[in-house]
Each structure stands twice: as C-alpha cells, then as structure tokens.
Image 1 (cartoon, rainbow, N blue to C red):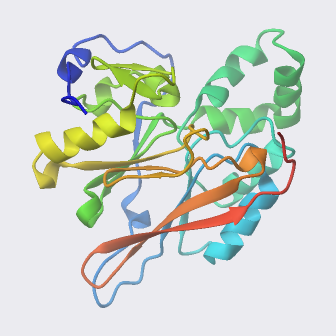
Image 2 (image 1 turned 135 degrees about the vertical axis):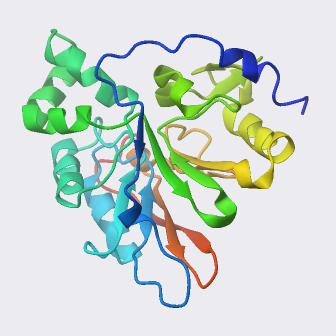
Image 3 (image 1 turned 30 degrees about the horizontal axis):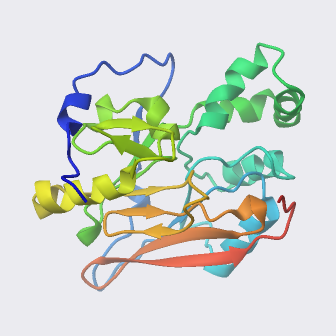
Length: 272
C-alpha cells in the first residue's frame, strides 16, 4: 500500500462543521476504567457493535459476557436503534444500565424528523421512541475518549471512524458518524477507496511514537464484518441481518489491560 498518510495533515486545516448543541467529545469517567495490579477491584468495559433495535440479542450477549451491572460499564458503538424490532427496548435497557453511546447518523437525524414530516418509517420510529428517549439519545457524544489502556494506547470509541493526524476536537462529526474510506486525506462514506482503518493503522505504526498511539473501536461497516487490527477494531458484524452481535470486553490484568472478543448469533427480527 502506498504511503498511508497522504495529505492527512491538510485535512485538519479545514474548518469543522458547526453542529449546534452537538457534544463533540466526552471523556469516560475514571471510575469506569478497569484497574490493573494485584489488588484490582474494578469491573470491565463491554463495548458492543451495532444493535439496531435487536434487544433480545443484546440481552443474550450481556448474559454470555456475564455482565455485572454494579461493576462493569456498557458502551454501545452507535446504531442502537432503527430497523430492528425493539428500538425503544434497547434504549430503555441502555438507560437502565447507564450505558455510554457514541452518536450515529440515525440518532443525529431524529431531531430533524421530529420537526418535519419524514418518511413513514422515520415517523413511526420517532413515535415509538417518544420524546424522553429521543432527548437521551441527543445527549450522546460524537467521540467517546476512554483513556489510556496499556498497549492499546489511548482508546477511543466512535460509530464510524477517525481521520489520522487530526485532533479529536477538529474531526468532522458527520464523517466520524459515517466514514468508510479515505482518499488523499479526505474521508468519505463511499466504499470504494482505502479503508480508513488501514490508513489509521499505518499512521499509528509509522508516524507516532508508541506512547502517542490510539486504538479506535467502531461499528457502522457490516459489509466488511469483523475487522480486528492492531490499532482499530470494527465490531459491526451484521446482527440485524442474522449475523452476530459482537463485544470487545476490556479488563485489567496483573500488569496490563487485556481484551477479548465475545459474540452471539442474532435471530430476533432477522432481515435479508
């Protein structure tokens, strides 16, 4: 592959679009970060891919993980609603568990649909969710900065992707929620081109010292499926269409953090 960082610094010079009331970055509270060491007592981070209203599958995944509500913390990597059979139920469960959810394109569109006619499916979704759930979804940050976790470096969770070489504060929120590829340093939601995750990993390995590297955990790209790279983890594994629902479980070890992949088959509301 040709040099992966082509023009990435130039992209950072562009003005970031102004999204009124959008929370660009949220730092995960320190109390949720898994501890390391012999006497560690904290829980785990459970980061789940695109749920799309598949509450039954989410419940099964949490059961398989052995989720402990008083110790563990749940992070849902966007697209938790729409298309599946129980969007409202997924939001209710996320709220009940005090989950953190990076924003995605669907949630971003809810406000517009709420004040316009929209199509039937969008209007039905808004009606099913109700204003309290929509208000909760609108508080979701575009970027969740988890913090430094050993060899993973600084861990960041977003729905779709990030542009390497651009500060989190200057990332375009539309692209963070939608991107799939990067060409000449410019992100796009098109599928043709260099996958942004390849460019990201090349940049981390060849242009940053080890202590400055970051790992991105994301969803959004079910057609590529599971994508486990050194500094990026794509965990949208097509639950909505009868694939799997995936989670990265991060816990503290004796001297470092460790992570594993946990999956369940999805059967509720299968779409072809």
